Image (cartoon, rainbow, N blue to C red; front, side, top):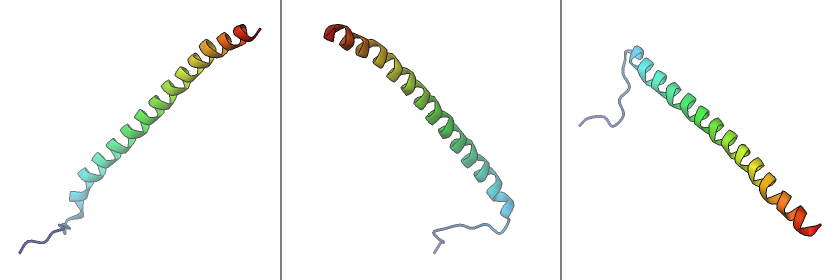
Length: 59
């Protein structure tokens, strides 16, 4: 019966896996930062548009 987990004796086989993991983690961090930045811009735009309307209606 074949083992469920495979741990190679030659540890150099882990290098490509670690590099791909780093690429995906860095990509996820960049995507998260871009989404946060876009969300802040959208929030600022929303506040300027709708909060200024509320002030003019009250006054």
